[in-house]
Length: 414
View 1: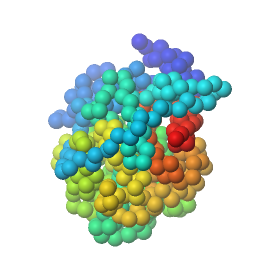
View 2: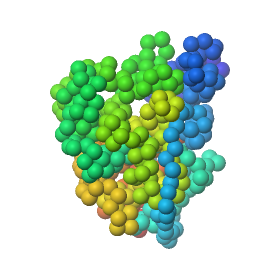
View 3: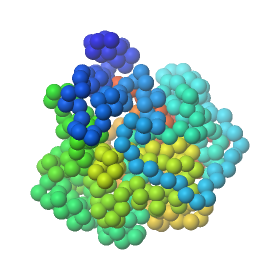
View 4: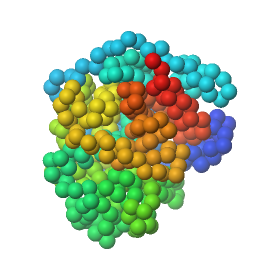
């Protein structure tokens, strides 16, 4: 199939989203035609590079979003100790929703919104669990930017341990390498709020003239020639730190680097010791990385992978204020700080500390990842919903509204 055929198919399936369609074609067209100039000596093979470029391909991304350690560099996060038993509650029938002028049942919703797996917990018990597209309870799914919320949890732990002295510390206290960059004078709090003031645009253009974010993705994640966080050295200041919201995955990579420097541990080791083992996870997780062990760093902004039920455990941990069965895993009050929202001016109206407000439900908050990954926490109804998806890059504009309508219907169903 030619590039023009690919673009035509994307536009036909997802009209009105030309920018995202162009992004997809940029991905597909960026696959090198030959083995020349694809990877440094000792780097990923040309076949591996070609596969990495297919990550978002909507024809296969229901499967490329799983077991990503087979394709990318990764670091294991081992489970340890007694598993946090998630009891079964009475089975809950998923509600139908009114959307687009019609009533849609769960099966219609799940297919409409490209669902790979979905789990609902109510009052700490699993009341619904669904695996689709040949996935199952052992499938490890990519979280994409839900990993940002996990990184925020680890910042809370590091604060309680006094590894990080204060959220108002300058980033350069831990990373003097960023003196003179756009991050000079920016605090940890401002990064967690996506208000760093750094000149960075979350736009992934590839090809002959890639955007800065596109260059970092290609050179760090696809080719492993550099560390993604090292791109912070090249930045400049766009706005006064703290003055305006600007969603930036690079900010989260810098925070991951701060955690590594402050704790003296890799992000995977720190996650394993202070989150995954205390959580009582039932399966190993893993972080994707931008290079082999001893060289690369974990992708703190988008690279955590786990099974569906362990994502649900993270949601329940947040719902319970950082506690597992009465034991404080995250510092008391830290989840409240993560979920204290400031307006974004966008379709998802609020942002806390690497944590989203996606709707107008009082007190509800979410971890959100690219292509439809959600951990949705609704404290008023004691509900946690995990939805793992395979949205196409050319995302139909109805996806977020339909998903919000479903989450609301579930939260209000008794």
